[in-house]
Length: 193
Figure 1 (cartoon, rainbow, N blue to C red):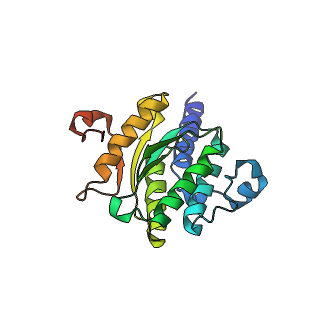
Figure 2 (figure 1 turned 90 degrees about the vertical axis):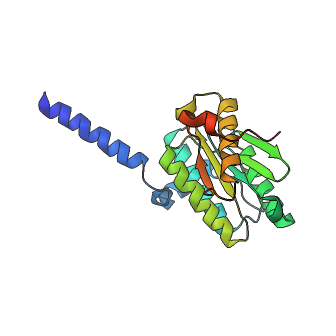
Figure 3 (figure 1 turned 45 degrees about the vertical axis):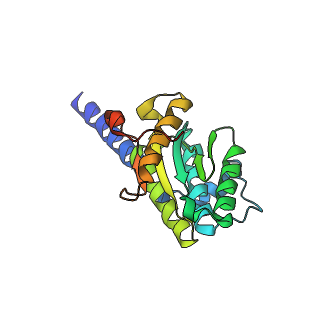
């Protein structure tokens, strides 16, 4: 009885560790073996580091059959040049082509991309990594993150929380990645009209 319980706890611990592994741990062989999971980036000319981040994200999501969460990218107005806007739209177009992902566009120079339902730590890691990759290409992004597990299954709720986090992330004194914190909704900045 005790041995069985210990075995179960060890299995749960291994599963928890696996869920928190960084995106880089995704197997390239698995990617090649599952071509249907690949986002259609052909001809889009995405910056290579940025495209790689999204490809690995797709592998992770399809591999685990995960649902939906949100990573919202904001392009500050002074950085919203033609190249930045074009690349942001291309990223959105890639995601729109997949039934397992919902997309939401905020309009103007702000964009939302909804990816798979990652644990919060992994979502934060992916957002930070993508922002760093984009910065190498001259794209300056902010990210607001809201996970389905924390908020519920309604994509509208997730989008609203992610937008609120994005508004906070775009403030000059804030880090470029902000995760929605349901315990401090009242402290958030109001949504832009």
